[in-house]
Length: 93
Image (tube, helix red, strand yellow):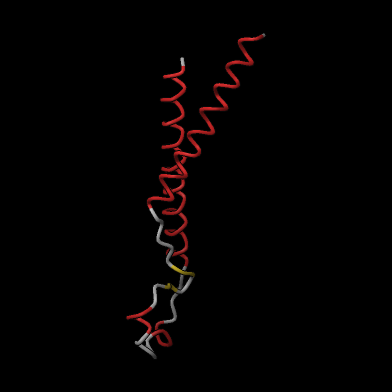
């Protein structure tokens, strides 16, 4: 049973990770789709094109893969412990 819970928790962590990536992609798509750039004033100064990583509706956030994988592992661990404790409580009854 513990192997089943471990596999379940890993799959849960992967699902949360994939869901967060999909959420960011869909959110970026919606923001990009709804953005109406001001072309005339955006190229008055072209120096910003070489130095900044911003877009007109916010900054570009680079998701660090170490933090993403670490978050998935932490969520998986929390899910595994919760699942084990829940199974123990259900066996006592």
